[in-house]
Length: 534
Image 1 (spheres, rainbow, N blue to C red):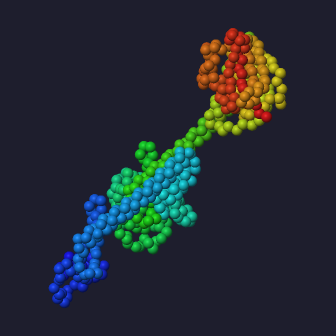
Image 2 (tube, rainbow, N blue to C red; image 1 turned 90 degrees about the horizontal axis):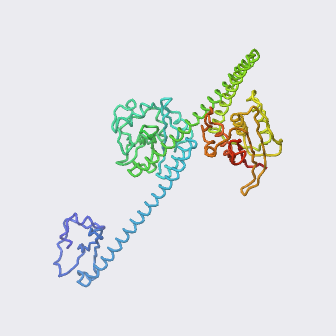
């Protein structure tokens, strides 16, 4: 393009401004002459044909337009420049893609880590604080809080704070917000009016459960100023579209399994001071869901602890009261027995007393089951001989009307196992079972204790042999199941289940054999194997 034919708009594209307006009349142009101000353009194209640049050769030394050979040479260099530009663009795009991929990998890694920690029940406040820290590191968020619904008090409380001084965090955590007002934001849709006493005039829904409240759509209440530690910025106008204002905030609701709000995650200032994009909001909502899981897990644990405490209390009270009532009944039966002379009446009183003792035994078993279900296990070195001797005395007290004979050579201080105080209930139940199913006038129980060394360690094996009705082979496999009991016998079916549960608790085992091999009707031998304690 000859210089004299260029328009002012064309001249404005040159780095060195060209003079426009009245100029001296140029001399007559020679053929193929290249004057100052002329332009020779070679356009650069990318792989799609789009122009991405221009090469402008200027001021040739000979003052002439390049000939065809030189034109071809320049076009070759133009092609090389196109390849170089395309390669540079691809390199930049690859680096950006790699950086984005690494960022995504880091985000997924952090999300997986916090998800794993959320699955384990732990201190809820600490869990929420960790969640905010991880979110801040991933997305570069400067200030945010999590408010949790406290249903019984009818309010939301801020339980986790990030990006504030200790003094400001303490003040924020003292704030209380009505459940009705906070839930209204989720219920009323994206554009409520008159919300929270007119504090929020309008807002925008920017995610599945996220709302953005710009400064222009709200007025700040006095109690909310603690959220804004830089008040001088609050008076400045917004810098432009997409920029975050000091008074902006964004709430992501945390929902329970039924879709009801139980908390909110509030962004108060991104570090880049830009309104979060859709990808960022998606990650924020993932973390909000994790917060919901943590809150629900914590509440389920607390409900379980409360239920466990209540169950233990009710069981203890019931067991205690039943035993007190039974003691009173037994006292009256003893007085009645002294005034009765007819044998058949005395036998009836004995049966009543026996049923009263069975009731006490049932209450003890229920309490034992409660402790087995809810109690913590803390095993100590226990003298098994002392336990067996004490259990014998207890059994005689349970059955004052029965003649019970123990045959054994057991002494204290010979055999030790790792157990707790409930080990006593294991053997009391075995002894009770021997009495209950023995129709003879004299109940004979034979005890044996021996130490056995096996490949996996040393054990103490206790044998409890009775002369009762025995256990058929097909029944031996189910007698230790809960609520299992012998046919035509009344009872709770808890005793032998407690025996097996306790044996397992101590790392041992229990089983039943015929006292006389091959003849189950001659009685049963229960064998309890427990790991020996040094």
